[in-house]
Length: 372
Image (cartoon, rainbow, N blue to C red; front, top):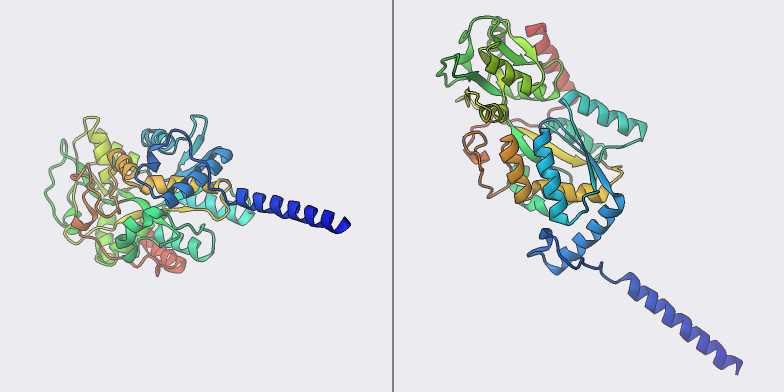
């Protein structure tokens, strides 16, 4: 009798264990009304998405820092992001627009203090992001969108499983057609194109992005060229919005470090800004976007990266910021300001090989020339 009882108890325990195991292996329950992201997705992808979305809802928020995206574009991205994944209106997106150097400083401070509050960072300093990846500070996440960025990754503009760029931008000569007649085609045509004191230049001594651009420009322009630009007594600026604004008001007649993104935005408000894509080429600065390894909201961060790199996300970004997309097959809605990446003549830069020591040396060189 005791033996029969023991067998019955054992059988019941096994049954309970199997039931729990079966429950543990049950796929996530899909919502009754599927958000747009599920359309056309495979069964495996639907399961992955359902799990990520459920976890992101529990996290409740996301924090990301960027150096280009303006508040209006962020609002559009945020609204579309919630809709795309079926997230509630109460899901919070905490966004901070920053200059490059403060973003780099803040991220490094949070990492060193082991008190990370930022989930996603995007900055036009690919060499620094490569260093963060090498140090293990970037979360390994193989976004399903990365397959559309294989070409640019092969060109050293990202790393599979770690980061891609949400958009890229250029710093090139820019002017207002209302005040300046300029028909140059070369970087050399900028020399003495306007009177001394009426040109601005990005401050390499204070900006990571301008430093990265200078590093690339030095591959095609020598020190004597920059000495000639310094002789024009330029104003030293950091924010690209200010650079464009001074052209519109007439305070400056030319900007050495103009940004097509800002030309588009100011021209939408009635400006007459023009820019030149020099025949020697321009430095493409990819806004390298990565998830911090200790991000407090990693699931929401993964969804954000997926969305921003998707075709709907890229469309919002390019329409709002006129940035160059690295997504294969993407047709730019603003070809005059943000042409396809393959149509641009670019200065080749080995971002991964551009160490901090090399960059410090280039910053010292520039500072010695311009003495800002």
